[in-house]
Image (cartoon, rainbow, N blue to C red; front, side, top):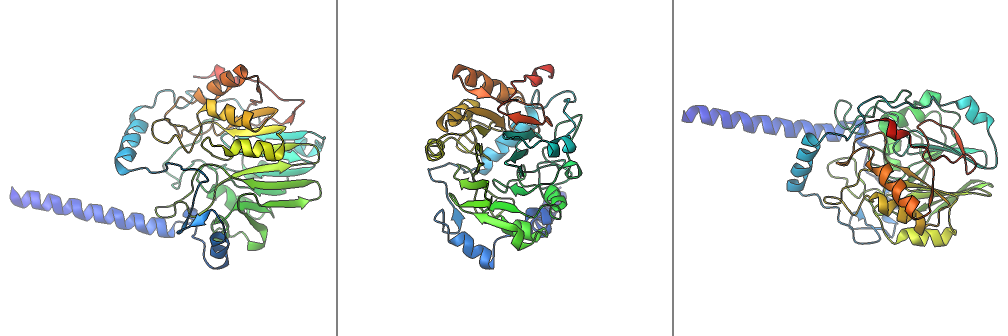
Length: 378
């Protein structure tokens, strides 16, 4: 009996060590993980006032600790509390019309949402793709992790019009997708990314000269009719086991000759929203994170829907559009909870909203749409 127990324990130890070795090899060799900054790229990172002691910091105290005990608890909740967190049937979406997109060049903002945080924007004739994620999963693995919801029409890179510029908010897998970027690298010549993210893109074959890196409040003007500013958010970064906080995170302000757009990326609620609203004197359209929140486990890094509405009000947005929902199961809430709570709170506060169907090409503000398409699905 003792000999059998000893052999069993030895087998468990060997199996555990083998798994650890395989994981270490995976995280060191899998291309989708990306690369740490070195050389000139590391010097860029070190030059940031947000960076010290080997990592970036938020502008306000933010709890991003996730101890092992909490991780086990959350994983158990994800595995057992599944009802209502994904739609039970296929969601009817629009097939994107690239020809129609190219033919429209009006003075307003042209916009299409592809679910979660992926948005195509045309402003002053320039087409900008934000946080493109067209892969099957928001995950480092191709075989496991959050899988995209069942849409009648899924967007892919081949269906896109000519894209002038790609903007990335931060390096998490639901915002920076290796399969998508790999397909875009020969089609797009300008990538605007936070400090530290350039090393990921360069390891995926994107030429250094096609990448421009940004610290908070850095600006760039791709041409005379448009300006982009990278602004602070309250979040974190990381794609592997040991790279947490080694790249920056943030939001994008896009200014045309007559319109201003705010693209939030991910953020917990913080005073910076009011500062941004005052600095830019409001926005014609604010694309606001609203989803994957959890009040108990990570309240500082994602907003509750009510906070998302308050953020839009802080920034003096004329129209607010909730993003970061409707495509991936990344939270413990019901899949429709973000939009329902956002719309209810926005209505109470007289905030105009835009809630398009995935894939629709609409001009803002004239075609701003208060659709409630999600009500048709369980």
